[in-house]
Structures are given as C-alpha cells and as structure tokens.
Image (cartoon, rainbow, N blue to C red; front, side, top):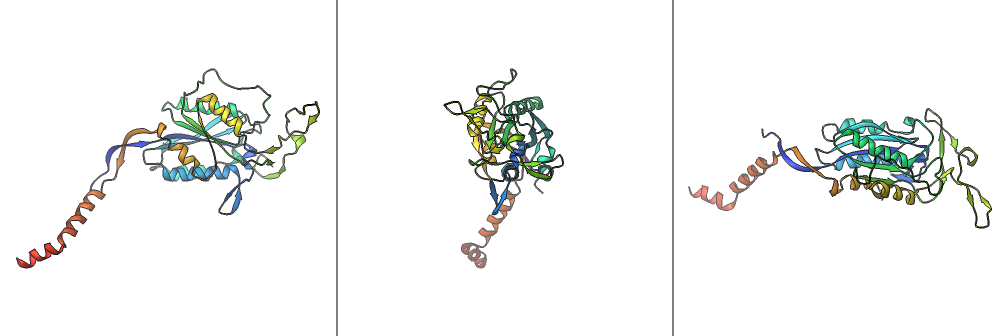
Length: 278
C-alpha cells in the first residue's frame, strides 16, 4: 500500500544519433558468433544502454544521412516508454536513408543544433564510422558559426574495424545490389612523393578514428570506439552529464524488510524460551 515517493536521483537525457549511410552496413562486428553490420551492433549497444539507465532518464533517437541529422523520436522517459523505445529502435535501418552522400562533420553539427532546439539540452551520442562521401580535401574543416565547443555535452562513438572492407550497395528499398566499385564513387586525389597517382580507396570502408577525434575536438565532444556492446552505456551514463531530478522511487521494500526483521526476532531461541516460561 506504500505509493512511490519522489526522491532526487541521478538521471541522463540523451539523443543517440545513428549514421544511416551505406558504409554502416559493413559487417565487421560479431554478435552471438554471427557477423553483423556496424549499424546493427550500434542498435544492440543502445538496447543494452536502455536497460542500464535509471528511471527518470530520457532517451531519443536521430538519424544521419547526406549532411543532416534529423530527430526521429524526441527524448522520452525510459521506464514508462521502454517498449516504445525498443520498438522504434528496431525500425532504424538504412531504408530510412534520404541520400547517398555522407558528410559526417556537418551531421555532427546538425545534431548539436537539434539538441539546442529541444531546449532541455540533452546530451548527444553520435555513432558513425567517420567516412566522408564525397571525401574532404586536405585542410577542409566544415563548421557552423552558431555552434561553439561545449554548447552541448556529447560523445562521438567510432564504429568499424581497422581493415578496409567493401561497402555494400543497396537500392532505395534497402535491397542489397552488390558492392560499390572504385569508379562509382568520388575518390580522393592521392599521389606518391614522386608525383605518381595512387588508386583511391573510397569504395572501401574502415573506422576513420583520426577524423572523428578531430570533429569531437571541434565541437567539444568526447570520443570512444565502439569496442563492445556496453560502449554506449558508458558514454550515456557519464558522470559529468548526470542530472539530479525527483524520480518516483519504490520504497515498498522498507516495510517488507521491517516485517522480516520482526519475524526473525520472534523466532530467536531466547524469544521462544521467554514465551515458554510465561
């Protein structure tokens, strides 16, 4: 009969942004012994994070493609809406992609804009392999004048392995249609020291960690590599981003524990002896 009591607890508000571009379909992760794509592994990591976040925390989903980040689900409370969060998360895949280009740096800046527009300043967790398509020229550093380092707390999570692998190609309905070939994508101009041209590798994909770290520094984010399924949990539950707010807390265990103590006390040997003497 004891109702929940509002008590101050640490909680976290986060928008998780998933890179929806085709390089995220490279299968260089493993789950239960089966190869899975970068995007699928990131979704599994997000599911684990939902189970670990305390009630009162709020999570939303966003997708990145082309050069923009679009909010798919505004942050909602994880306990009351757990089923909705899982159901919507399962629907996030490459079929939601609205363009084949992948301007990651601009996408990170757009994610900061999205968080600022919400008003409650949720943190950002941006998951990407860092592959820019078309590739940036040396010295290019995209940015926006209205975004300053530290405006929003956040993490960039680098997905993918060190080995460059072919990028799966899919049609508008998400059906696989082979792999991207060198002549089908814009390649960087690469030359040796003596001026000879080197074949480009933009049709292959690996984690671009150096590039992602540079973007993180530019917007004041932290960086981590998606090495295991708990990576997102560690980023989302970062102590610096905790918010203390009143959260309905179940204290029914207190009277239950008191009753158990009384019950144990009543069956102590000295208690039984006292009753027998009476």
